[in-house]
Amino acid sequence: MLHACGWLEGGLVASFEKFVMDADQLGTLHHLARGIEIDENAQAMDAIREVGPGGHYLGCAHTQANFKEAFWKSDLLDYKPFETWSDEGARDTQALASIRVEKMLGDYVQPPMDIAVREALDAFVAQRKAAEPDSFM
Image 1 (cartoon, rainbow, N blue to C red):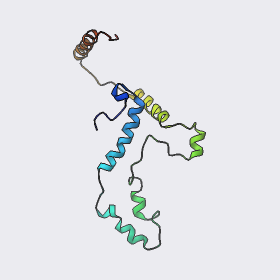
Image 2: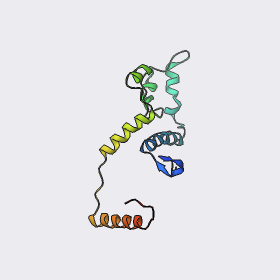
Image 3: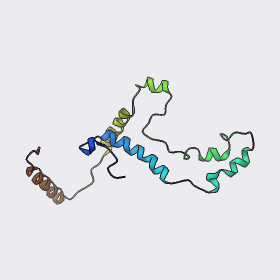
Image 4: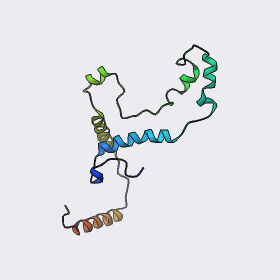
């Protein structure tokens, strides 16, 4: 999806936190775009035979083998019980995204770049900024 992450005010400004939140939601779309599997495991025929009428599926082998990967789960949102969430400061999604951004920026390692390439890029950026009447140097 083009221009999906982090944009605010029609792309005039951006937010790292919104980028993280948008990327997380795009994970849902990626999961849905995979489609529905039509194989023996996905149809859970062994589980249906194992459990039989009137039983429950929570303890059957198929459920135990598949439940962790069966659904897309956001790694940004807080899935704790309300009381725990409240006791830990009732952080909303933006606050959780801010924590994620802080970690990502802290963990970032700039890839190596040839010094001549870096100097050429810096000179180009300086030239372009100087050409704009309202530029900030």
